[in-house]
Length: 245
Image 1 (cartoon, rainbow, N blue to C red):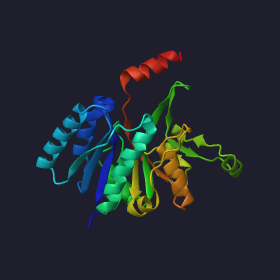
Image 2: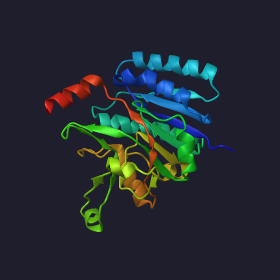
Image 3: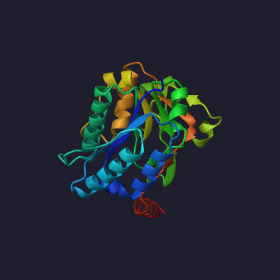
Image 4: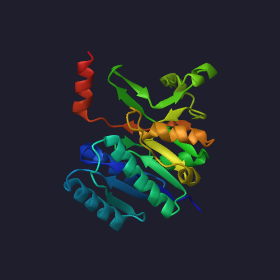
């Protein structure tokens, strides 16, 4: 029997610019044994109603179940709201005993064969590959980090994977961390690790999740051949790039 997957992420109305392409990406996935859960933490209710309409259409057309949860806008710290929303999805994944949770952020669009490809890799924590904008460097970087040496590991000095590291297409294991934007996580890992927020620290919950997974003895892996599209809100990207020129 094919593994049952729960796909989803926390979201809010600021991500509306990429909603249409995200939903199209979900429709195009060739693997079909999955359900969806999005958790909306917008201040106002308009985005939630829009998401509900999309979910109702999906549920009338597709076999999988599309759930929309409303999360209270109860924290002034965005990273805390993200963690709370992700843990709501985790709770659902554990309650309904999904085999895997695919953390797929709303601005990350995977290839059509993304799920079956990662399943074939037989890893407990594995991410696809995507880039992120770093305004300070005025460049894109791969969201995957490793230690060059034992000395670096002891000093907690990480290095980002470079473009040359992506070829040939393969799985890279034992990374320090990857982004959680397109990460497939096995049920047994979810049962041991809750997503968390560390107040006063700049790191997001993907860093802490990888930290905790490593602490439990799991490998953090990356499929270099599963390159995902990462959508940026144009005005944010242009403004930050221009400020660094």
